[in-house]
Image (cartoon, rainbow, N blue to C red; front, side, top):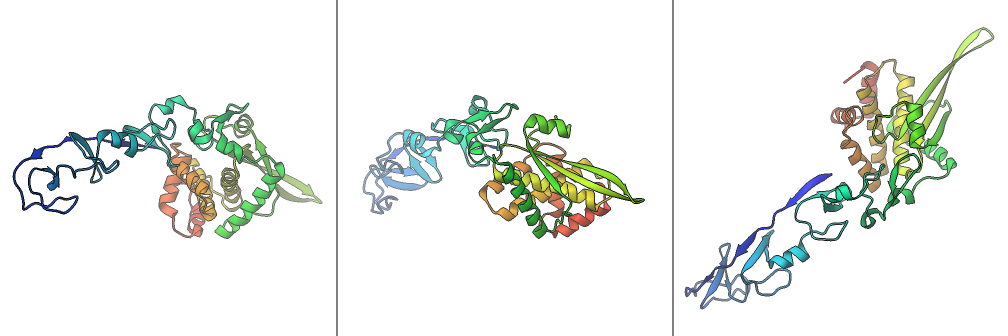
Amino acid sequence: MKIVCISILLYSLLTSFTLAQQYKCAECNKKIIREFITVDGKHYHIDHFKCSECRKKIEGNYTKSEGKYYHPQCYFNEVLPKCDVCNKPLEGEFYKDIYGKKYHRHHLNDYIHCDNCNRLTAERITNGGRKFNDGRYLCNICNRTAIKSENQYRRILNSVKNRLKNIGIWISNAPVSIFPVDQKRLNQVSNRTGIDRLRGFCHIESQRIVLNGKSTVNDKYSIYVLNNLPSIYTESTIAHELMHIWLYENTHNKHSEALEEGSCHFISYLYLKTTRSKEAQWIIELMKNDQNKIYGGGFRKVLKIFDGKPVSQLLTFLKENKKL
């Protein structure tokens, strides 16, 4: 989210009465015989200096913007961008979010942000929102497309695994269980209550089995994902958690948290890029702007080094190094 500032400057007209037949009017391109107006080095007949919005004669004060001239009220009411929350003109400092919505700064305190997509849950922006029993407040854009069926989670898991293969991330055929849970349960199983907007957790359990004198190790993978989210958010979360499985199966390093989480975020980023959807681009922007030092900071470091390079370079790096 960024701050934008619009400055409104008012100018006053000065009328010249010098005979100036050598001048041509910048509006009609005809010779000026008697009195005229000069604005920014251009000359106009008295009645030809007009507002670019209403096309009526400008007298007294005017506002200039991007090389055009306006009555101050025309500029304020018709030209200034409108707040997407209250529909009133925006002047001075205002916010513009990653979705292109603009609003007055005070609305940041007037409405709750969606705990998933970070939109303001204002009626004009998201048609409001809903509070869940686990304390989350989700906007109605996210609620409207949220996944509800447990079978759908399994289909999404298989789909993400297949798409990751195309990227170059191969996960073993060991069974992976998926559990949609609320925020309280997710925090409980992950033991990471201090992480803002935690959406997933991968639990890996190894069991040693002795059969006929031979010892084998069976790995059990369980992915927990935050429930009641739209599909693309769930997909990006699953891609992140599957990368944790790849790290477990293919490296013997105890990576730093920033490298491990940053690399998992990077694989999620590569996955999102393959979808080529506007929603995926929004999630990528949220990831890039994440202020968490481990998740956001780690991701930005990995992105800076490996973006645009073959994914094999990152995988080799992870096999050979513990930290960035």
